View (cartoon, helix red, strand yellow):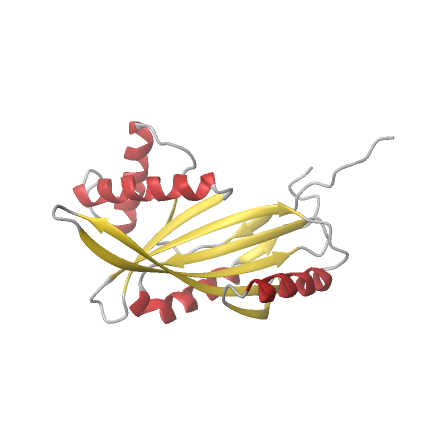
Length: 209
C-alpha cells in the first residue's frame, strides 16, 4: 500500500521595504558583507559603515538562533519611533508546519482551544485577506547581565503571532512579529497586523508544476 503525502502549501509574504531577510545558518565573511550591504542600502549609509556591519553581525546571530528553532524565514526591520526619539528593531519569523485539518474553521477552533488553555497571552480570532486566523499576543520578561562590574538589565520581549491554516487542510503557517521596544509596542502591533494582511496563499499547483 502506498500512502501519498500532501505537499505543503506555498505562500507569498509582502513586507515593508525596511525589512532585510536574514539568511539561515552561520554566515561566512562574504555573507556578512552582503547582509551589511543590504542593511546599508535600507538606511542609505556607506556599505562598510561600522553600524551596518555591527547590525549585520547582531541580526545574523539572532536569525541563526530563530532558524535553529525551526523558522523557515527570518527578517528584521529597523524603524524610528513616531516621536523620532528611538530606533525600533522588529524581528519577523515564519514557521511552516504540515497539518491535517478538515477545514480552515476546524483548524481555527482547535487553535483557539490550544492557546486559550495555555494561557500564554491574549488570544483572538481575526479575518485576514488570506482567510481566518488566530492571533496570540504575549510578552516575556527576562534579565541580562552586562559589563564589568556586572549590571543587570530587565528586558520585555513582546510578540504578536498569527496562526494561519490553509483551506486545503495541509498546511499551517505561524507568523511571529517580535520586539523589545515596550514604549512603541502599540505601533509595532499595527505594523504586525499590516504584515499579516500581506500574507497570501499561492493557488494550489502554481508552485508545484
